Image (cartoon, helix red, strand yellow):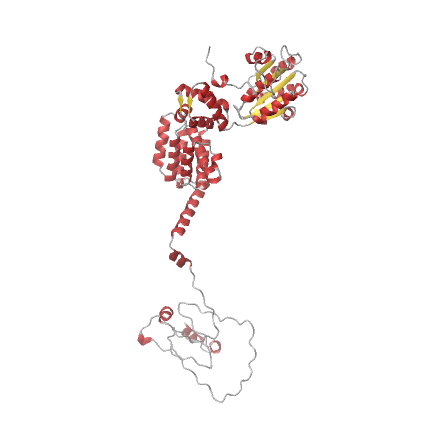
Length: 511
């Protein structure tokens, strides 16, 4: 007997065998139990999620002679005949190669005849979005009001290309991407039946590579079995043509340490091993996506699909990167991946991207400028946090300004204040300041290093002065010790300056 590939050998025969599509299988089983068979179904979803498989199971279920809880028995004449291809009442057509109006007209001519052996004549049209416009128009009337013994099952990966008039006439089921846990469980089940050793890390890696497609996962497992009967993560990476996980971590560390030389050496080694540069760029994007989720999500373990050992390493690596840095790295890789589509040398595009990641100052885009500003802000913040408290306080302190008094009292100066306020002059040139007069209070002259301050305006007008009673004797004036005064400018009588006949001489005195 010829060898049969694993995804065909282990294709589900009942709804119970379908993984990851419970919302679809349970609904179909309920309808079959109640006898509510619709005339048209539309199965949508990404590749490898079980659309065609469920269509074949449904075609057996509607014709099964001994239905068990909505599942076909698989042993009756109709079920066995459909599995073996002996019953011609179930027709499977590929719309990608039979997309013309003539193919649809042939179906329209056949639906008028009753089924030969089965209860229903079932038409499974796969990749139905490939039908031409004329073919859709020809099928529309028959799909709306088909004979009672006809069931149409349409399957597509691009539901947006289906006309609205067709969508409104079908019962639609959306197939989800299968979770890595379900794919891993199915792979272990197949490996046990094939007597193959499959590690948990290898099964999880296959599930991640499959990206929700069970068929792709089983096909990759079949390829790994050809390499070794003891399947590990290294075997899976070799079969899939991927870089080692350690190399991805090392490239990310090169971007952290700005080690351009080592990053380019890794790219050169992978290129010599015939690794696809576009796939490597996508792997790096996925790696930095995991770092982004670790930095942003409170429980990243639920979203990051990695082994426990790899997840711990990713958490440690994410601690050395800020979120803006990770987003910048992802943006550079995305631009490189886009440029690879039109480039004659994808390797050069990836090398340019790594140089920009390791040396952001070479990138002149707005994102690179933002990354440099972010790094500068981090450096300034680090310097502020590490600065001594005394230095920080002295840098931010501002000398308080004392309020100006309109009639200040003479104060005994201290040596420190004299040294700070009065300029040092030779002893022979110093002059003692005159003692303050009681009959006239004057505002103190400003120091040389200070600007004269205008007297503060009183809050309310002063009351009128009352004549003081005659004093018997003038109070003795208490003499205050003389204090050194700052050099004063010569005062000028402004009224005399205005009326004097020789104003220029007086201006010379002022100057």
